[in-house]
Image 1 (cartoon, helix red, strand yellow):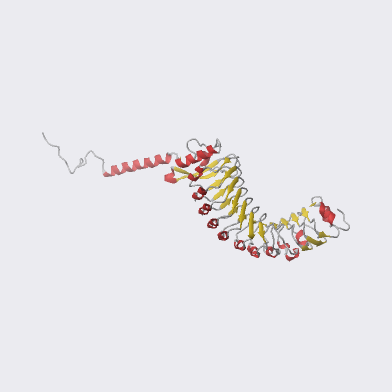
Image 2 (tube, one colour; image 1 turned 135 degrees about the horizontal axis):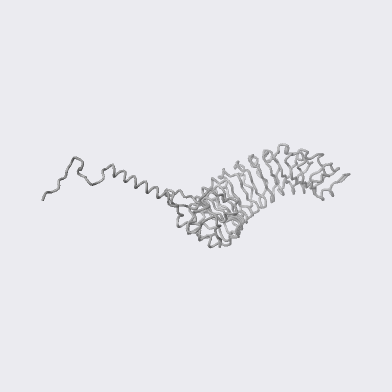
Length: 412
């Protein structure tokens, strides 16, 4: 019996019956392409830990997803992944948004969670800590109660956190200082108390902070001086005390500053004159220590200026109000302002609301006024003389007590 011969040449070759190297390469390339195509066609799935967290949160709060959000088995689907906007859209509430770019577009992470104005009741669910990719959290206008949990500090991807208008209480946890990517922090209209943690000064990217209408006490931490990007600071209606910090004048990106409704002591720091970008300024209810109006002279971008009950001892003539071309609200009531009312204030073409009641103003009223000035309070002053013709304007709300305090002939 003859043995088979192994040829090293010719058409058969040593590997006769086996694929050539080129063919093998093409086969592998084809298989690889098929695998990539198969992965591309595979629907991305929500991270199972995050999926469980979303479902647990909604279950605990007795909320259900809207029909437009196909949550069954895979929360990151439907409106959660398409271009649908969930901001201020009641049709998508509760709602989430997801990023499905992980692991070659096959794995989704929850980046936004919205439970807004849904009468949700209860403490903030523990499962929230598992949404570690969360960028935006919106829990506004519900009935969340209990503390703001320290585990919030683990959600370090957060850029916006809104828990305002709830019933949350207790001190603000220092762990909030770990959220160094935060751009906006809204804690207003709750029952938080205690002092603000120094760790808030670590939030150097912060642009907006709302801590108004709570029960915070003590002084504003000096570490807030590090928040150089801050444009909005609302700290009104708390129990803050001590001096209004001088460092606020170094936060020159501020466009809104609210400090009224506390127990701050005067005088108002003159450093606030550096805040030339301010559009809205509200300071009030100063406990002691009088101030002048000189610090507002540079703040000509203001549209809203409220210094009500701030122990202002000055004359209106100390400020050139003709430069305040954007001013639509001026409230200097309940102070110790003396002298006459300058014609320049009534001439402001943007001014609608002028409240100067409960001061020691004297002399006669300005002869003319801008048509837009329709709400005026000059009550409880020492104004005398005749009423100007504009006092009969049918669109004008001029308080009755003003008429009783004016003397002389008038046509009102």
